[in-house]
Image (cartoon, rainbow, N blue to C red; front, side):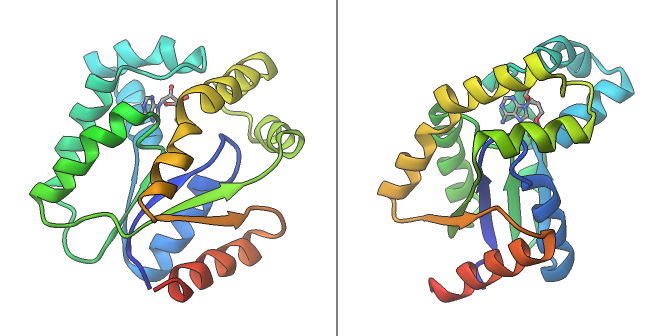
Amino acid sequence: MKKRLLFLGPPGAGKGTQAARLCGQHGMKHLSTGDLLRSEVAAGSDLGKEAEAVMNRGELVSDALVLAIVKGQLGNLGEGGWLLDGFPRNVAQAEALAPLLADIGQPLEAVVLLALDDAVLMERMLARGRDDDNEDVIRHRLEVYREKTAPLIEYYSQQGLLISVEAQGSVEAITTRIEQALTESC
Ligand code: AMP
């Protein structure tokens, strides 16, 4: 199974849930920039203070800030594989990531796109109840996704790395679908 991965998909598609399950079952390291940012906010660090207002508006924090966080994590990825969840969020971040992975000799093997329609996304996010999950902010996060992040689908598709998985159904069924896709497309 491919084990150097990136998850792509709209907010609410279940990236965090699926990433945690996949990493728990297959021993990869789960790296979520959203989780890392939220722990900076909770710790009240300078970085967290800078990110908090932006996150609560549903916008993207600066590339420089996110790249600083990611660079800090890449040194201790180990050899068991990894899954980047919520990063890259735009083409500039993707272009910055490639040389960093080349430097550590661990190129990306696959990009998993979790595909789901907007009505289901809105429902899931409202049920989740996070600080940045009220209806206006959710709508804005979807717009930001479409404008900034969705171009990565084409970007990674051209590199032959994209695997699209239908993110409807039970959590277990979706995990199985992802595992199959990562095994079959070798
Ligand atoms: P997530 O948990 O991935 O939905 O991220 C929550 C929020 O953190 C996003 O709405 C952004 O404000 C911020 N964030 C997470 N990852 C990134 C990233 N790669 N680039 C910019 N902002 C990010």
